[in-house]
Length: 154
Image 1 (cartoon, one colour):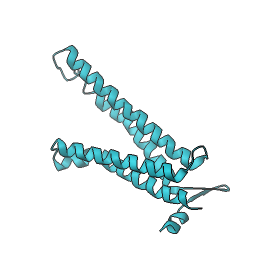
Image 2: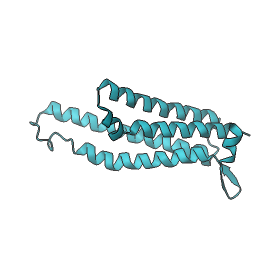
Image 3: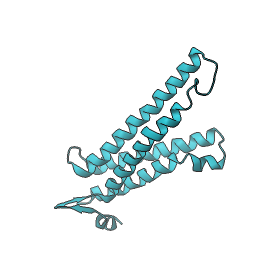
Image 4: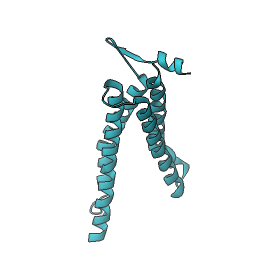
């Protein structure tokens, strides 16, 4: 199987790049753009003031905490996307394959936590489709795993 992965590399000029890690970086970047734009707009729409909740300091504090936690994911997505691109285009970090496996595991954990949360909240099946972040993280995990195999080859 690793020899099959080697043939699916990207050649730019004289350099050969991991197509899986490159794809993981691109998918991660698109996810970050969606999260930072559409997700932020959606989250801001849940403001207590916009939902006509009685103004209270505790409600506003909880909402502010949720918004801050939401934006922490922006940092997480940005750093994991940057790591994918760093592993593709630079030699700054070694061993590349090990770091790609760790990034794959990180994405798999995010997918699992998302699914567990949906199950714990007893959400209907339609929410698994309407809230497909688990699928996004699963795809990134698979791409990083394939990239790790490519990066491990000589």
